[in-house]
Image (tube, rainbow over all chains, first blue to last red; front, side):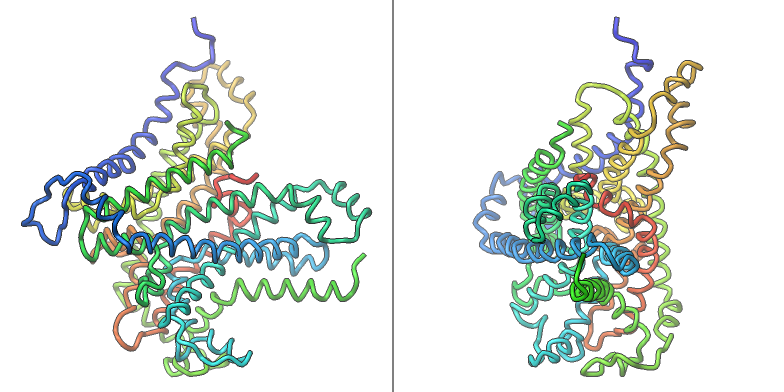
Length: 295
Length: 272
């Protein structure tokens, strides 16, 4: 005799089944389909060749493809450039928002942080194209105020990379700021006040009192941003299409091109599966580190 | 407590934050109001005589209106499905005990991590075979992959906060589990359901990659149209920025409505 929980054995199933089966059908089935495709020669631009099974050939090709590794390393470089800036600026903004005084101004700043987060990523790319235009972009006007000559941002390797970093920093710094602000407001008020009586050093306060409350947020930022950067497509695609050359060819932009410009679905599927494996490792890490208390 | 200098610096810093976060938005809106000659002025002009001609252009363009309509249909439909499927699942995760519950919950969450490009390829091939390419349905379904997790997460959290005593009282009255869900959890959990619906709408509205790949002419969405002018020699910047404004404005308003939940929505509660 089972303990009486007040509901039938199958009740949870009926509540869960629709969501689980839907997600399985639209998530797992296509993933299996991609897995099968990744073992085939599958170029839909050349249907006469058929779609024969070729074992691990696609994977061997992808792993020997210098461009694939370059796009992955560029994605890594993008992460290592943009995320530290976002963390530093985000922390600075959070500290300013946490500090007492100017409550009206703080309220406006806090609300305005939401705007970049909601802006359609594709439109962020469009704004970036306008702002960083060589001839009439406002970015060149800004740097001219500091005595720098105009610069062809989107036409040069380092300029285009810098431009997509700037747009990403604009869009995601508020995210870091809001997470850190939430962390700062977790510090018990009496502890913070006691510490302020002990020391006048803002640094000591941050290091010894506030930092422990900021660390969970920092972990979240590091992991969530890494998943986002692996996914990053819309803004870069609209702004640079991965160019000039391979200057902004992030991994998602590259796979999209192989799949939908070259139509080499076999190779693109193998790349996508490798990306999926990377994502699964990341999300395991993410769950292990972030949802510790639940497990 | 703090020196006047520190106070001035604080105000200055806050003003800079506001300027930094709002500038691209401001620049988009003002650019949409400039004549083409002002748009192409070098260096850019900050003061100009505004014109609404680009908006007249946008609203006279059937393709743009159609795309906004498509985006609305797709975002609303996928949100309804996500809530209808996700809320009951969230209830089960919040209130029932069963084997593998935690694993199931993590599986829902981890679906949000998957890169769209991973699913875009096979979905494209499947859509061709099933003749679903360039239909609303294929986008509505595929958008569930990121909307269902968000609804499940936010609603699970919300349902857990509802006192269990209400449920026990209703059960003593002989109410079935489905009645309890419908009469107690849905009404009391409405704030969470609404927040998750708004997020689901925002994410669907903003999506580009799937929309780009899975649509041709008939069901192009608003972000696809906005990026479609980006070819040719002299770009119609005024119209591009006007379209951008039309797309961004409604979701910004929605986002301001849920601004207190923004971090929760974007991190799925990874930070408390």
